[in-house]
Length: 160
Length: 331
Image 1 (cartoon, rainbow over the protein chains, first blue to last red):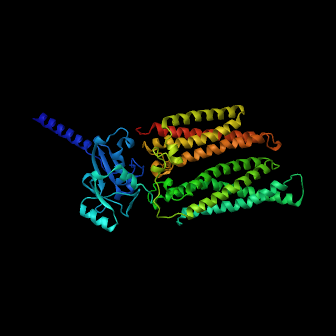
Image 2 (cartoon, each protein chain N blue to C red):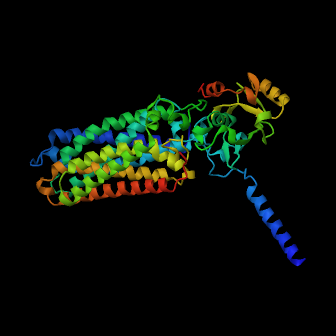
Image 3 (tube, rainbow over the protein chains, first blue to last red):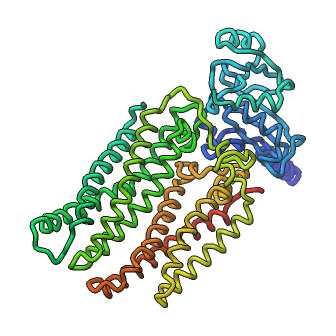
């Protein structure tokens, strides 16, 4: 009985260790650069975006624009990874300042609000907030995750 | 204009240096015209007295000029938070069309100023002003460059507009975009560039050791050290940077001076600039080895210059190699 209890405790202990080691570390460290532009992301908490890969690695971005660049050309910025290995994608809601699922978010284009890298896609959790922002900040359109194209991202890099 | 303490410091340093240099260049031309050590005329006596004042003054001005390159980079780096899109000095320098020309001229003037200091030090070793005319000829050549630098720097700082969206270094030094010098250097193939760097360094250092031991082929070392300086700058953009950042697409030569990279860039650039000035210093002093009052003295000084140059290039290479070996870059 005593041996069984010990064995049970050992299994429990092993399990808990495994759970801890497999838990995702999604906190930004001071040394985390954006893989696309090299900026240190911790300086811009309002603009953080994140991609988590299946191998447990996480990449942070100083805006949704750079995050999309990584999605569109994953191997360029992370040579040993592919788009298919992406597990989770998150962006920061502009009003709530919290990480939300990027695939269900609404993005406002053409507004007068600039991110650390210039023109940006402003992410919102719900469409009403996005609409309100569009009206307040002279936005041009609201689009979903699937509607974003590489050409659209490239056009955001203009300097005017 | 942006009234930032570092901007004021930069402009003040530039105006002081220019003013002093124009004043010194005026006397420089008089020395070039009328200097005659054998004469006892009043003008010669005035010039002899003036030369002490001027060379002391110029030692400080050129010393300031050496520092001003690093102050300029530091300023551009610290102003990055004021411009949308700028993440380091690269973006700030791109705020208007005068940033990069100022930087290029500052690099050229750094080498000029260093060489003048070398020549001045050698001249001060002899009792009969042996290099005085050469020294002032060099001064007269340098002065317009420094004045143009001051004009460009003023245009750059005074023309800064806070509402511009500048380009970040990610796009200025992109290996994909083929436009712009930064991108062209960044797109040089990384591994061949690394080999070029190491082979060129080996040849440069071998020629340095040969000169140090045999006192021959000094001009070759001076030339190679100048060439090595350019190759090292290209290598920083093309390949060394990606190992330091551990990002396969990030080629910026300015982000390495940031706190997050332990300011390693400053150390690398100080070593590189120190090495090129002392290396070229060998070449500039070699023609004067036979001057009577400098015999023996100059030989020792030239060898010291060559040794310092080699040591600085070696330290640069060791530091770079260390960063490459311990880098977690995945290519």
